[in-house]
Amino acid sequence: GAGVSQSPSNKVTEKGKDVELRCDPISGHTALYWYRQRLGQGLEFLIYFQGNSAPDKSGLPSDRFSAERTGESVSTLTIQRTQQEDSAVYLCASSLAPGQGAGGYTFGSGTRLTVV
Amino acid sequence: GENVEQHPSTLSVQEGDSAVIKCTYSDSASNYFPWYKQELGKRPQLIIDIRSNVGEKKDQRIAVTLNKTAKHFSLHITETQPEDSAVYFCAASLGGGSNYKLTFGKGTLLTVNP
Image (cartoon, one colour):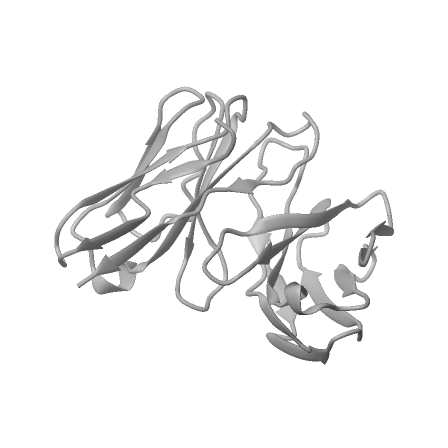
């Protein structure tokens, strides 16, 4: 597609429920990233996928968070047993592989998650 | 891991003035430094980036400078306009290696007053 697509754009869930967020990267972008942005805060790294390499999960805040990616396409971020502190905008980005050119990310519009 | 500090957290200027945002990084191996602009309620967008083999890069009213020795880099916006009002994020990474993770600063809210 023309850009990075994320769905849903907004999600309100009850505390304790599981949620699944989806990211569809730009075609041809082998690298995919998830970041979390709390209200008025910076971008907090969560996880990074690069081709078929093992993902870098060093930013996941707890074992309630997990993410998968099938090949070089869609990724899903799952948050189990959601807590109020999980409320944030979850941003996905994709980029060309290192060495393939400009290293800038293209971000999606994000999923605004509200846990009530 | 990498740590990026960004200052100031807020910056207010008059239209036409210049604005400067500064960032420092901790990992001397970092070699790629992008800047992102995020307007209210919108996604961050890359506005300029610099690699460690150059000291300065310009794109119209925007410029970025890099001092590898001091491990700091800055964004300069000249002749500011109200549409420049946004949150600006700096970032650093080991671009070109197997790990392309970006570490972001906490952002600077720039307000350009007409």
